[in-house]
Amino acid sequence: MNLDLTPLFRTSVGFDRMAQMMNQAHRIDQNNASYPPYNIETLDENKYQITLALAGFTQDDLDITSEQNILVVRGKTENDVERKYLHRGIATRSFERKFQLADHVKVTAAVMENGLLHIQLMKEIPDAMKPRKIEINNQNTLETSKQETIDEKVKPEIVKDNVA
Image (cartoon, rainbow, N blue to C red; front, side, top):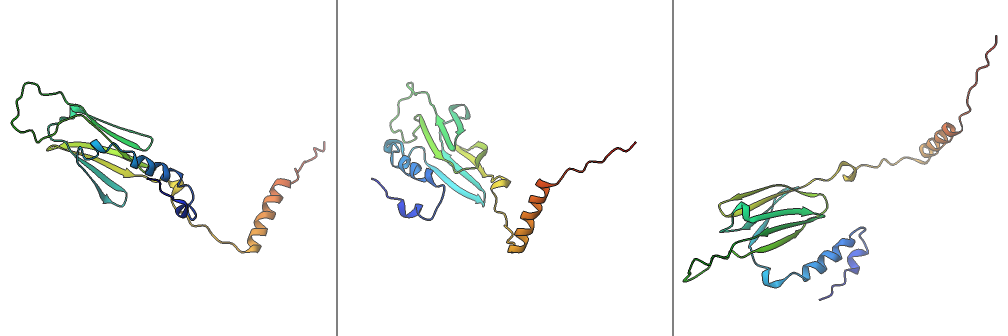
C-alpha cells in the first residue's frame, strides 16, 4: 500500500519523518503484532503511559531501551520443558515490541506491577522551541533600530592627546 501525503505537505514544514513512520508502520511483522497486548494512555497534556500485559515475566526477563525516538521493550523466557500442559493459554514467548516516540518524548520511569509493565513518558519541549511572542514594530522604530546598529559599528575611536 502506497500513500500519497502530498496534500498534507503543502501546508506543513519539517514533517519529513512522517512518511518514514507511515512506511515503517506498514512493515510491522503481522505475526507478532498482537503480542504482548498493550495500552497507550494520555495522563496529562505532556505525560503518557504505555502498559504491557506480561503475565509470567519477571523484571529480570525484560529489557527496555530508548534510542533516537524509538522505545524497544524485549522479553526473553526460558522454555518450560518439564511441564506438561493440557491447555496453555498464557503466552510466555520471547518478544520485541517497538514504539515510535515523538521528538522530545523521554522515558521517565518503568514499573512492573501485578503482571503489568507501566512505562511513564513525558514530553519536555526545550525553552528555545516553545512559542514566543514576536513584537510588531512600526517602520520608524525599525529604521531607528537600524541606524543605532550602524552608529555603533562606525563609532569613531576617541583619542586623548597627552599634553606634557
